[in-house]
Amino acid sequence: MSGSVSMELSSSPPGLEAAYETLFTTDSLLFLHDLISTFDDEINEILWLRVSKKAHLELSGDLPSFLESTAHIRRDSDWRVLPIPPRLQRRHVDIGDLAPCDTQRFIKALQSPAQGIQVDFDDGNCPTYYNQIKGIHNVFKAVHNQIPNVPHISQAPVLMLRPRAWNMVEHNLMVNGKEAPGPLFDFGLLMFHCGKTLLENKSGPFFYLSKVESFIEATLWNKIFVWTQHKLGLPLGSIKATVLIENVLAAFEMEEILYELRAHSAGLNCGIWDYSASFVNKFGHRQAFLLPDRKKYVNMEKRFLRSYMDLLVQTCHRRGALATGGMAALLLPQDPLSDSHRRVLATVTRLKLLEIKAGVDGFMVYDLNLIEPMQKLFKLHTEGDNQLHQLRNDVTVTTKDLLSMPSGGVTLYGLKYNITVGVLFINAWLSGKGHFFYRGQIEDSATAEISRSQVWQWIRHQTHLEDDGRVVNRRLVTDLTTEVMMELSIHCHSVRAKQRLHTATDMFLEVVLKRDFPEFITTYLNLDHTFLSSQSTGQVKAVDTDMNQSKL
Image 1 (cartoon, rainbow, N blue to C red):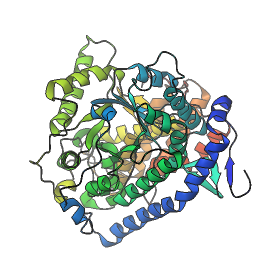
Image 2 (cartoon, one colour; image 1 turned 90 degrees about the horizontal axis):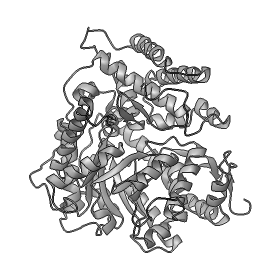
Image 3 (cartoon, rainbow, N blue to C red; image 1 turned 180 degrees about the vertical axis):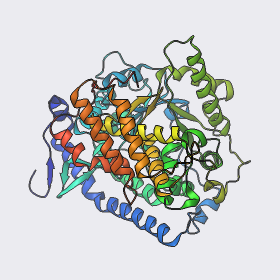
Image 4 (tube, one colour; image 1 turned 60 degrees about the vertical axis):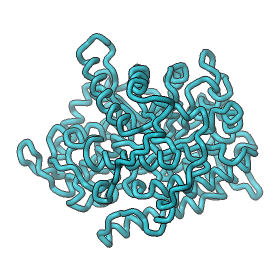
């Protein structure tokens, strides 16, 4: 494009020419250009503010707290978010981590009895150019009723669209001489092509907003929503968004985040692993914030996580917003009569009942076979469409509650498990996939974040293993990582798969041995030469069968 519009777009990935032509019209490109040009500087500002905030915490030794400057918002008991649209009132069970480039799973989700689908361009998705275009085009087809044998968009599970987070860039689009922000690429195309139709069918446009760290970032999203609605001729408040509170700093600004988005808020969401990893990100150097073995000592019953969930539910319900829980990552074994099936179902039921009792209005599952049992659980223990009436006035959460680390140590099993998840996640990304299956559950970038964060932190603090007193240091982690690679390599069915696993192992060690903690593993990989070159040589597609997943 020339003239006053400065854009460069890479040509279509092989096999997606028709989708590419559909998505990248002259009008949609002009819209993207205007959207990105308008907000690019402000996105840069919030990213620098994050750096500034982290530097302040590092240099001062301060801890986060509820802000004095916004106390008036928290004290004002009168304000509420705009009423929740009918389609969002009853969303007990959503399908989570659904990368829409996986056409087969996307269709099964649309045919399922779930109330919603987290259409994921973030944690559960690997953002190759191929996957982004394929995924956005699949959403386009679903919204415009171009997929056979699925319900009309007004009857299908509601689409909760999750664009990439602020930290991700789109390498294949340059605007004004800079790579485009990933979230605006995703959000812009989805809104341009689907926003009006979703609104006409009273089924959106609804979004999940990832990795928001402060109310200032919520303010920016709100500006983007207002601008987009005006540009596309949609009424103010048409867009509704659920903000994922995945960062400890955001936990102290939940009311302010709702307030800034009050015309566009669908509520807040709490998860476990990204949130836990954020403690290492923000306070990893501090001995007082040493996070113990997640497999043994970290769960939603621990004080710091329980307090966070209670405060989130209380905050949302006081303001008329929905509070949703995290995703059940466990997979049900195929034989419904087996002991293992009963055991997994009992575990998921126990954990999700905790969330229901805390007052959540819904949560996610990965396994489609968990949808109906979890819907029955909601029916059994709650009344009505949601739990907005549960105001949780019994709850008082303090700064100390939110920052109290669980006690416990580090086990050899936990260390090895974290190494394996980290290596397999990088391996999945190099294969063009954003998640993988391991030991009966789904693993994605959230579990990869906590895994590599813990290994980095345990090395940093030279933690001793509970098992035999050995120190977690570079030598031990390198030896165990080599051991893990040898164990995993027997599942590789080609020379290329073995080479890729070897590369993933090297990259994992690179990340966990760095002097300074890399902010996000996804940013790190998305800017890495190995990942980028694997795309440009056409190696990366969404589906790859070189490694036997079922065996893992």
